[in-house]
Image 1 (cartoon, rainbow, N blue to C red):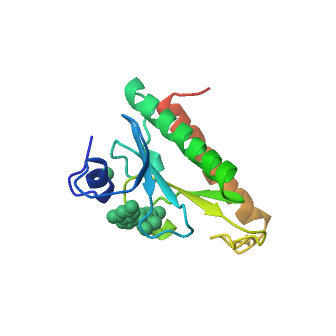
Image 2 (spheres, rainbow, N blue to C red):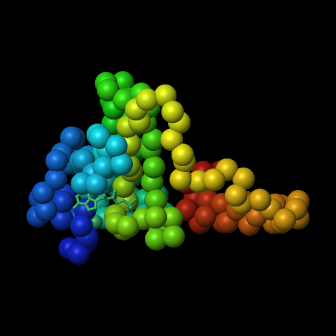
Length: 157
Ligand code: 5GP
Ligand code: ZN
C-alpha cells in the first residue's frame, strides 16, 4: 500500500535518495535531511499510513508490520542513547496543527547531548481549564470516545 505522491513512499521505493540506518521488509529508518540534532533518525512503516490513527487493528499481516515499527523505533532510540547520545526524544506528529509536514506516519528519534534539558514542544500548564467542570467535560469526552473506538474496533475488553 503506497501513495505515489508521498515523499516517504518515494524514499521507501528508492525513487528519492536517503541515508538508511535500518531496513527490513516492513520498516525503514533513515537520517532526517534537516536534523534537529546530529543523528536525527526517522523511523517509518513501508505501508502508507498517514497518521497513528491509521495503524491497523484487524489485518494480521499489517498488525505485524505495526508491531515491528514500534519495535524498531525502540531499538533505534536505544541504539542512539546507548552508543553516543546522552538522551533521546521520540516524537511523532499527527495533522498539520500538530506540526506534521509529511503525511506518512513516522517517528522522530532525536539524540540529545549535554546536561541542559531541552525546551519541550509543549508548555506545561499552558492549557489550564476554567475549572473542574471544564476539566471533567474533557475527561468525559475522551473517555466516551475511547470506549466507542474500543467497542468499534473490538480489540480489548
Ligand atoms: P514532520 O514535520 O512531518 O513531523 O516531519 C517530517 C520530517 O521529514 C522533517 O523533520 C523533515 O526534515 C524530514 N524530511 C522532509 N523531506 C525529507 C527528505 O526528502 N528526506 C529526508 N531524509 N527527510 C526529509
Ligand atoms: Zn507514504
